[in-house]
Each structure stands twice: as C-alpha cells, then as structure tokens.
Image 1 (spheres, rainbow over the protein chains, first blue to last red):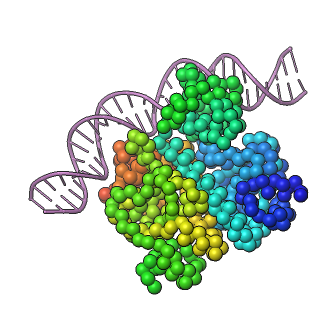
Image 2: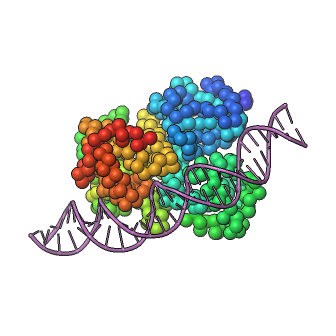
Image 3: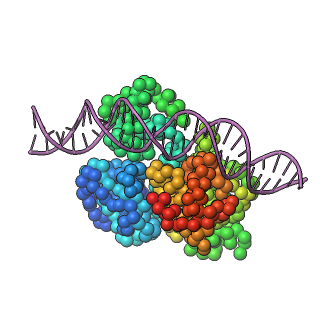
Length: 223
Length: 223
DNA sequence: GGAGTTCCTTGACGCAGGTCAAAAACCGCT
DNA sequence: AGCGGTTTTTGACCTGCGTCAAGGAACTCC
C-alpha cells in the first residue's frame, strides 16, 4: 500500500471504502509541503478542493483589518479541512495556515465529485463529519456569547483531557498566544487567567504541560 | 398534491426529488402545532428526527444557568432545523422554541434513513445544506470574537437587505430583545446602538420598520 | 557565548458594554 | 377606551477585559 493510501485510509472521512477506492483516491490527490506559518489559502479565494493533514498542524482562522484573529479550528494529522466549499463553488469562508511545518494531501474538487456520487458511504461519512463540525461551532458560539474567559479556558482544558490516556495531565499543542486566539481573547488576559488558576491551586503549569489538581473546581468554573 | 407534499417540495433539502418521493416523504412526516414561545426540544434531549417549518417561526438557541441566551438561528416557513442529530444518535446540541405560533412537519430519523440512502440527490442536498449552515456559523463566530456591537448590528442590517426587493428598507422579523440575543448583546445596549445610528442619520426607525438612509456608512461600520 | 527572535508575563489604564432600576411606549383583549 | 402584559428606552453605575508598554524567559542561529 502506498504511503498516501495509508494516510487516506486512516481518515474518518474515508472509513468503510474498499481498498481499491482508497487507491483511486490516492491517485487523485497531490502532496503539498507547507512551511511553518505559511498561508495555505486566504478567506475569499476561490476554492477548488479540500485538504488532509499528513504531518504537522494547520489552523483555520478569520482575521479582520486590524490583524486580530480568531481560530475556528486546529487540525492535526489525518484530519481534513476545507470540505465545505466542495459542495458549492463558493470561495473559502476562512483562511488557513500551518502552525508547524506540514505535509498535506490535496484533493481537487472536480475529480472528487465523481467519487462522491458513486459512493453513498462517502456521502454519509461527509455528512457525519460536517454535522460534527457544526456541533463544535455551536459550542464555540455558546462560549463566546455566554461565558467569560475563565469559563472558556476551563471548558477548553476539560475538553483537552477528554479522549486521552491520562485524565489529569494535558500538553498544549498550541503556543499560549494562539490558544488565546482560539478562545477569543488576548494573550495578556489568558496569561492572567492561567496565573489565577495556578494561584487558586486548580492547575499547575510547567511550560506547555498542565496538571489538573482540582478537576471538580475546573468543571464548576466551566459552568 | 397534499398540503404536506406542497410544503416539502418547496424546501431546499428536497429539491430534485421525484413527485413520488415527495409523496412518500409526506407519508412519513407528522404535523405538530406549537404555541408561541413553546419549547420544541431542549439541549441534551435525545434526538429522533428533524423538523420543517410549515408556518410560523422558530428559534434555535443555547442558554446558560443564569438564563442568558444566544440565538444560533431563526427559521421561517419552508426551512428545516435539527438535521444534525440525524447523522449520529447524539442528543440535540441546542434548544428550539417557537417565536410565533407555528405548524411544523416532523420527520422521524428511522424512516428517513432509508430514503436518504436510496437517494444520492438527497445526500447531496443535505451536504449543501449543512455546508451552508457551517458558513453562517463561521460568520457568527467571527462577529462575536472580532467585532463590537455596532459592527455586528450594521452587518446584520446589511444582511437583511440582501435577497430582498427593496434594498433600503427592512422589517425586523424579531422583537428587538430577541435580536439582541441573536447578536450576542443585551436589549439595553442594542437599543442604545440603534439610537446612535438614528442620531447619526444612518437609519430611520419606525417600530420594526427600518429605512437605510446611508448604506455606505453602514457598510463602513460593518468593517 | 552573545544577539536576535519569538513567546510569555506583569502592571497601569480606559472603555465598551453588562446590569439594575424605573419610566415610557406598545400591544392585544375585553 | 381602558387595563395588564410585554417590549423598548433611558439613566447611572461598575467591571471584565482589551490595549499599551516594558521587562523576562526560552529557543534558534551565527
């Protein structure tokens, strides 16, 4: 099995496809190497396909004229992004750039369309995938509109501990400044909130490694 | 053609289906009458199907313990909501209630699954539909995180004028207090911002009817 | 080892907007 | 027309957090 096929077969989008289908997808896609902090596409650019992260990490974000940015999503290996524009010729609704040097697989829209229509499984996977993203956005909107920064941070920390071996220890996969953008706040404010949580004995920080000392309190803070 | 079939055939989800399919869908669904401000479902409740608005208006929202709420979406006639849970047994991610007395068509998940898998067109419609909603959420997140209230209101007003006959006149379909929830602010703040815009000669208000006097300025304010 | 970079923290300050309270306008009903 | 209920407006007050500025800390590259 080719390396591309191996990556593709591990992506949730393509679960349940035959080995032959995977091979044909591997034939369709092309590889892109992206340097750290390089732009992959900008909001408003015409969209011709979607991406799958093979290695590295990518952020999807919006920014305004003053350079303030909000991160919508962070994608690691075997996650896909920019599927949305595939379904109506519209331009990308947000920008993407690499937070680490990355290797991506790119699937052009045109070649993909045929595969999708031939495979009900694939449509259903994509539906589940989009539905999942909608849920996450829902949570993010709720956070921004209804919670203040300490609650947002608390629920993010709890979220990070979920689906993970050790329940009381997390490692941030993002620099703190970027985490601030993800939570819709400023680095300064985030730093202060971290300090307060440490002060209160709820967490302990060593660089990007965080220990949860009082999970119950964290849950209470998250609302 | 039955009344249900007529409504179903006007919904974007079901475009391109045969008349016979529409009839079979009409057979699947059931009608629910909902009084103004009645709850349709609450966040966290198990989800067994999705809805289509036949008459009236429904809001999808989240609220926290203190009763603060953020409106995620407002649906009018021939719009569908709560499609997301159809694709994974998960509970509703938000609550829904009627902002006006409404009649809804309800499609149970189980009966629907069969129809979906039989109709690639339907999957593609749903994909387009979900993609559309993702775009809207993207905008909402951007608004909340990157813009202040006047900019949010300005872009909402501009949005309302789009897809509409008269470009300089809009009628709010929501009470102002609810609009505040949609924009992620309080009725008091919204009222003040409206007053400032009127003062500045950008708009004129007569109850729920708003005239745009200076569209360019509104666009500038929206960022 | 020193000189940039990039990232993080801390302090001081100001303001957008949330909250509380009360008045005013509006609405459907009888 | 008048009444009880919502909805909207206005004023006064207060606070969370964004911003500016400056100092550390950690990492990379000669």
